[in-house]
Image (cartoon, rainbow, N blue to C red):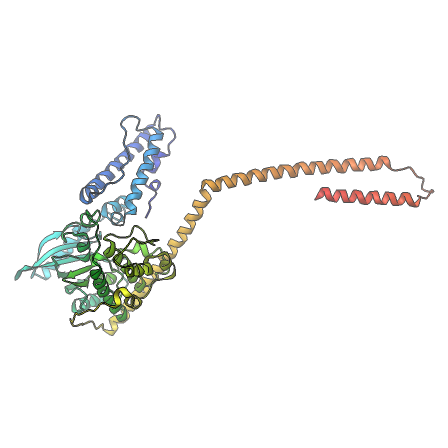
Length: 511
């Protein structure tokens, strides 16, 4: 994502041409400009630099001459670069301070207070639960909050409560949603993390699970503590190291098996990433099955909306698995997608799978199926021993509601991809038309056209002058003859030939 700084409130200052002796209005704009800068920098320092220990390219300041037009323009370029660095970082661009700064109207609500209100109302009706402490910013979502809990008669057992506001892809009726959420709490699978309690209202949902002390697969990759803030854990890791080959093979096979199971059952997911996989020993268990029901956006949505071939939730799951496999292999997410070349991996079979998902050819031609991935050498020889019983029978009425919701989610995805594709084409055309090379070409063409017009105009004047001279010359040289005296045959032929020659010359001049 790249935001043009000229679209923000700062735009009115740098374009002023009379800043050397600013008026009262301009001074007011500059003060507003500097105030916004200060607020933005304070937010960044507090939420990014202090928490994530990132080094961001802050543009230089100036005490004397800071109202000069040249300095303001130079500082605007620096701020644009500063903003580009933040928005190109997938984790930073999803953080609340950035969202609030870039789009204050849509991110003005305090979701922590709303979550506390809903959780308090829940505890009134369910007195056996008790909040231990809020788990501040352990997730990446702005509209999702977490609380550490316990059961009053079992004080040593720790639970985690997640509260989430409903998202833009919520297409189920309130009745069907309540039924689907309750179904999740009743089902079990060897590679799905158990839900203890779940409920939904017309505006939000609340889910309770056991708190896993070891954390998620992402915590294992980044050597992080589960209770730390998301930015602190994952934004700037001190050591980048992937997992061992056997772990990659085993975890990958388990995740693919549960994805295949969900696809066969017609249950929409679309929310696979390393923080949504819990580890229990050597077993991976999938988290947040309720996200697609609640209509929440995927962590990797900004990636797969760029590729029109990724237009089903099954394809989305495979694309997200590619990101997860890359992270398990190299200890960090890919810098960009598609990936043109992959670094050396523990095995060539890992690179083969990654190429089938994240390469330019894969994103252009479409994703492989989960069944196809399971047949590839990296996973085909992995033997799974988990014998836990599966209980996942979806009622027929709910199955139809899930099918309709899945179709609606995919339809909105296709529409968004179409809009992005059209916007990119328009941007490319505008960029091409406004490039220096194109400007030079247009200037050259304009000069040629001007010269051609001048030449044609001069040629036309010459032709008219020639015509008038020829007419005058023809009249002067004609021999005088009386009407009664016949013209000799040879003279008539010469006159005829002369007129034909004149006619030909005229035609040549006209051409």
